[in-house]
Length: 211
Image (cartoon, rainbow, N blue to C red; front, side):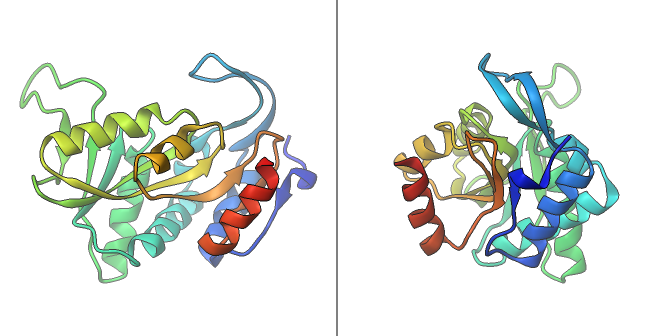
C-alpha cells in the first residue's frame, strides 16, 4: 500500500497533481518486491494501466499531457502499444473538448500479420511533427522503438512525454541524444514520488538529488 511519506506534491499544474493523487488512490503506485521488464529488481512499481483505465485517471492524464502539448506545435501524438494506447486516446479526446484537436496513433511492437499489415495504427503522416508518449520510462526501450518507427517515415520527434520517469537511465540517455523529455511524476530510486517541477527548478532539484 502506498503511504503518504513516499508522496510529495511539488510545483506543477493542477492536472499533474491530480494525476499523482489518483495514481495513489487507484493503486498505480505500489511498493513491495518487483521484477521489471529489464529483469532488474525494484522495491516500487508503477502500474500505468491502473491509472489510465480508470475514468478519472484517463481524463486527468489526458488533460495534463494536453497542457504540455499546447505549449508546442505537434501534428500528432502516440507511442508504443500498449503503454501509450490509452494515453493517446485520452489526449485526443481532451484535445477535442478543448477545441484544439490533436490526432493520435499507436506503434505496434511488430507489424500486423493480416489486413493492412501496418506497424502504425491511427493518424501518422510522413513529415509530421510528433510527440511520443508512454506511461513510464525506465531504460527507455519502448520510447526508443516508437521514435525509430516514426523517424523511419520521416517524422520529427518534438517531445517525449511520460507519466512517470523512474530516473534509471532512460530519460537521461534520450536527453543526451537531443530529445526533450518531460514527465508528470518523478519516481526516484529511493521510491519517493513527486510531481515534476518547472524545468528551470526541476533540473536543479534533480542535480542535487543525484549527487
